[in-house]
Image (cartoon, rainbow, N blue to C red; front, side, top):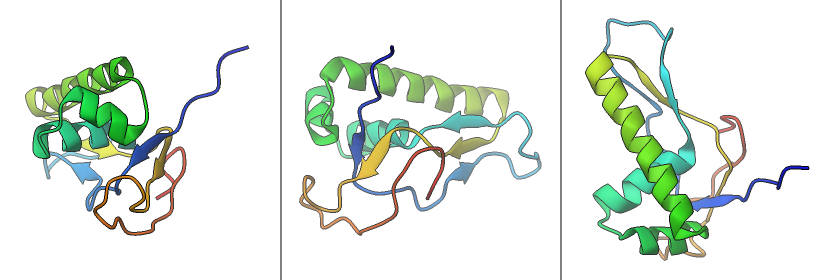
Length: 115
């Protein structure tokens, strides 16, 4: 029996969840999970180390390392192949300001794109 997935804490959902060329349809779009988006946001935008990111998301550093590597590969594929990038789904919960100290807004959370 597989181990149940661990929920990853995220501070908020993206303002926009679809990016890419304007002249393409959604066919062949690359899907990025919300926790992958959060790892990119924390490490690349906020300047967190992988260890700090792991503490924020309440997962192991090695888990963050894998999430981050997958997210970067998806961004690269989107740019190089000219495909749309859609951010949705994943095993996450919005932290609601309890962990990040930013006063995160209370938003719906869930799995499989329930924004």
